[in-house]
Length: 252
Image (cartoon, rainbow, N blue to C red; front, side, top):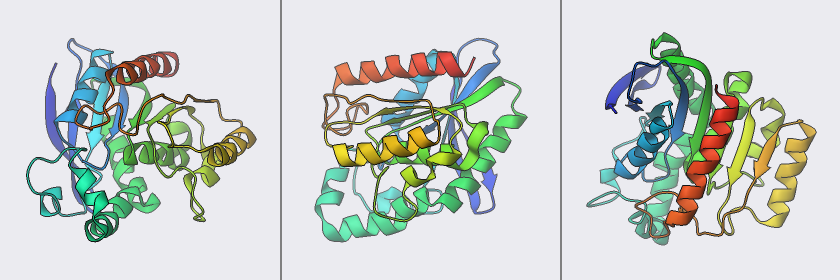
């Protein structure tokens, strides 16, 4: 099963992008994978390759392509566990939020980057059918936002241990649910989506007539990503089963 790195041109410069392709001749439907705060690295590649084995071309763009390398912020191996030090240090946390996180999740930047990814997908001879997305932590937020930006160009949206779906900001993702045309599956971890926030999210999704599932996982934030201290194999396997069902029923 080939895993390659390509560059996709955007108006903000090249976007390094990982592509995991199933074995065989294809063509296959496409899944866009959105990584967590740790960026593009082996733990996220592992997820992409697992999804590719289900029969999907998995495309994972580097949402940090406008920012310096994460190695300028973190010394040594970059893992989700290593980010514990970043979020424990107010100065490092502030640098990450301003220099990486906010640019990655900007609606305008996502529209540029994922618009270029969708244009690339349209040129590939090994793909067919519809496009789905999945994301983790920060990437879960990006996955949901992508559904609000691109409407019926996205058929399935998944987000696992997502953060920030419901905030007090005017552009909080939940306020843009009316533009979602995809089927949505959300798998929050413990404390990811408190009852009040969930009620607001459900109200907006219901008003928009979105078909959705919110399934709370009995696991800590980061449960699906193997280099997180909170990785939980049982929950990770449950997440793969949920993805397999979602994509089989929406992307064929």
